[in-house]
Amino acid sequence: MAKTFRSALKALSATAVVLALSALPATAGLTEASAAQKKPVKSAKAAKAAKASKYTRTAKRPPRKVVVRAVPRPPSLGQLTGLHATQDALDLKSSVALVIDQDTDEVLFSKNASAVLPIASITKLMTALVVTEAKLPLDEVLIVTSEDAAVRAGSSRQLRAGARLTRGEMLHLALMASENRAAYLLGRTYPGGLSSFVDAMNAKAQLLGMHDTRYVEPTGLSSDNRSSAEDLARLVNAASKHPLLRELSTSPEAVVPVGRQQVQFRNTNGLVHNPEWDIGLQKTGYIAAAGRCVVMQTQMAGRKLIMVLLDSAGRYSRLGDAERLRKWLVTESLVPLMPALDSTGVRQPL
Image (cartoon, rainbow, N blue to C red; front, side, top):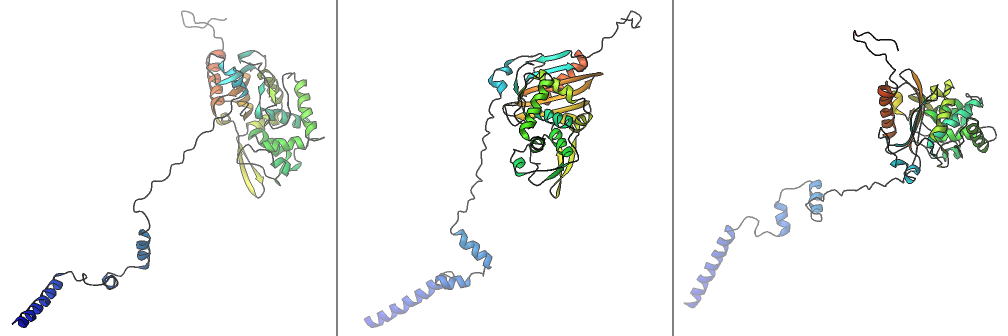
């Protein structure tokens, strides 16, 4: 009896197990390997990505922000000596300004005109004047050496060692595009070399009555090249008498061969493109010690004027100051004296 009961119990247990297994999902009793065989077959690329995802985070990290901190520019000499505190009626950003009538020497506007400051690439105007008056052959081909190429370039468009240009082309780039290497090469190839050229620059300055002026090199990169607005007006007056210097300094752009490429150089003075300006001669300049500078010979209201702006704060402020002066000159200072109207509307003679 007991034996029969045990046999029945065994049979009942086996049936329960079968029923339980039949109620489970199809893969529940499979091993990990056999279950994987039942899954859809993935491509090799998808499998590689799935494997990689096991070891990477699902959330993407936000891109790292790069903070660029502006490095403050060192103050100019004019700022250090307090010239920027000088007030003027036009609220100019330049600490030095001078406008004179070229024919009469009448001073129309003046602000710290006798202050002696670094003049940056305004130096190149004297470089060009000395080269021109020396009557050196402008068609002579000059080669940029490693010594010239070591001079700091003024822009990304630069002359590299081995470049071959004529002296006239070098003169053009020095005046129009303020090319430092071209100016240095002009001084280096002067008879007697660079030291003789600097002596000639200083001798010409004395001859013009520029007694507050001193040059130590031909590019303007040195802050030891110094002058005053009054002296620079004399330089502009002398340089403007040379048609070649007027033409080259006001040329909007030039394309010259540099190695195997044709490289375009542009004028550093945007006012040469402005139809409201009639500029006969110009030169810009900038180094930190000098600030932004510009000198020009121009015509307004039928008068020839010489304009000098030195030590301007801000990249475009020298041109903004020039515009303020132009508007003031043509609306107030240079307005021709008109006879008065009588009661009939007819102008009476002065």
